[in-house]
Length: 216
Image (tube, rainbow, N blue to C red; front, side, top):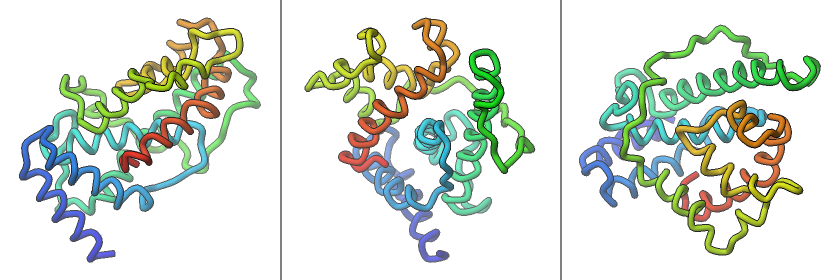
């Protein structure tokens, strides 16, 4: 494990030696993501993939420059420790927000519980405005969704609602994501309906593309 952490530190140092947005840095960041993806905290919650997307975005923006948060400091801990800390805070946010949203749309017994409690606090620095320049990894996902070369994303929609399809929801849920509450009000559909469709139809397609590109 120590050897692995040292390998990650060397890759981070090498990546940060290249210019922001350069192909060389993108290649190294993608390599780091591949190495760390299977070692991050995992849990079986419907919003885990959303939280993971935010974590990768945070990683790309802050591992070298600290554009939207605290820059990675190897003296604090390993890359895995740093990413897990952020991922768990985002999962906590999703848990709190989901309960708050569901309280007005579904009975209390539908709420999900967690053994982690709500002891962690939200770091205000994580809510700073995002940099206008999106990392190449996020740009790749956005371009793929907008292009929809085979039309599959547009064709896959909620029954009777062609305007609520995979392309629309994936683009709206890419960071900085539109909340489920806002989407519910925009499309006049319940949060559980939208969230369930996203989990069943959008995420598998998103993961398939990301895996084919070696992003996740």
